[in-house]
Image 1 (cartoon, rainbow, N blue to C red):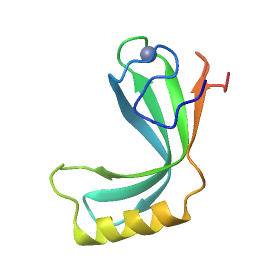
Image 2 (image 1 turned 90 degrees about the horizontal axis):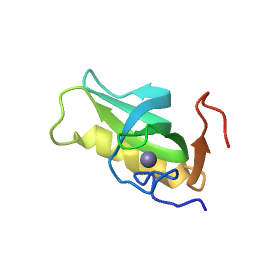
Image 3 (image 1 turned 120 degrees about the vertical axis):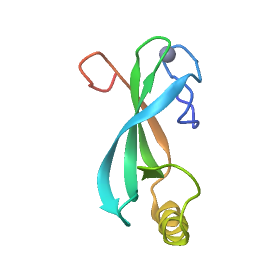
Image 4 (image 1 turned 60 degrees about the vertical axis):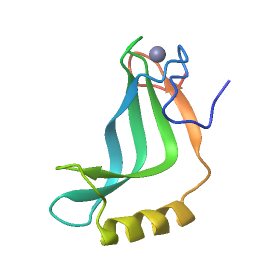
Amino acid sequence: MATANPNTCPHCGSSNSGANFGFNPQRINDDETLIHDVLFACADCGGEWAAIGYVMIAQRNGGELSKEAQDALAGAVANAEELRIEALDQEGNPI
Ligand SMILES: [Zn+2]
């Protein structure tokens, strides 16, 4: 059963996960990049999944988001398609 929470592993239910790749990167400044459709991996079972329609800011240095990053994120969220979680198998194909 798909969940709308991109941080929860659809394979084992763990929330011990992290984003490890994003598609369609859109550079905002030297430190911040807006990414659409994010690949997550689970630290507990090693499973992977894609959060389609999920947008986030990837930061090189961490810390607070800049104003321009917040604005870009808000705009991207407003235009994003509905969030969809796709569990992936070992080869990265949708299950
Ligand atoms: Zn897992």
